[in-house]
Length: 259
Image (cartoon, rainbow, N blue to C red; front, side):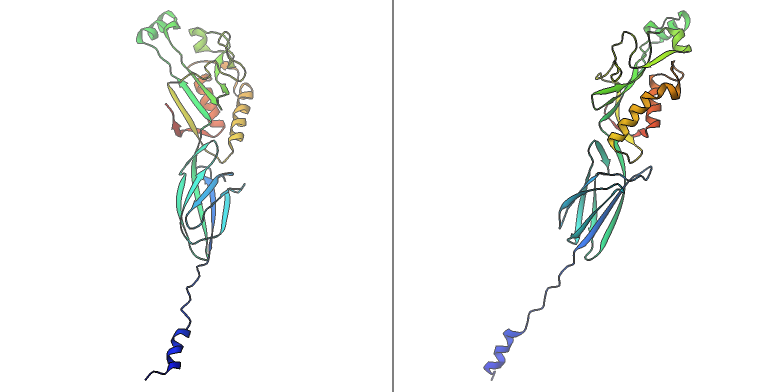
């Protein structure tokens, strides 16, 4: 027979404790893929067992401490840029610090390169070559627009004929005689181009730094590259835009095609 005291002991045994899961940490380090420069001010948002957001510092890093272990999705956002990739998955282990190193490609969306291409029929080219009459040729134009508020292109200082086109004439930023430009607005500002794209950025610099670098390029263009406009030899609106992109670490390759 079971004694009453023996039966009473059954309910006194403690239950098996559930082991606690230690939180973990996540360090995110972001660099630009072609230069390996740190990218500051990228907003990193976590979704998973814990949530939150932080911005990368001057070293391109941000840190999340005391977060639940498990699977996370990270979303990456930076004002004025399109990031590639813009999201990534990560796993945080209990009691461990996970370091995630990301190499991103960036496109700056507040800068647009516009290109109206040269258009000429066979007859117009023949007339230009034989009679030195370029009137049937549409030279097109290349220019850059920044923030929809300023723009720059390289022009002949005054309307030019075939001899001046090939041999070279005085050049000027934006302000060709009779074209209607200003020191900070190309005559074609706001016009559609045959081709339009936002360039890829090949360093980790901020949007403000990049834009100021472009203005500095414009201000120093004649000192660094001369004051002659000629086509198809340098410098004309095509080579002006290409030189600007080269000097400010922007690229057509990997750009965002808008048109």
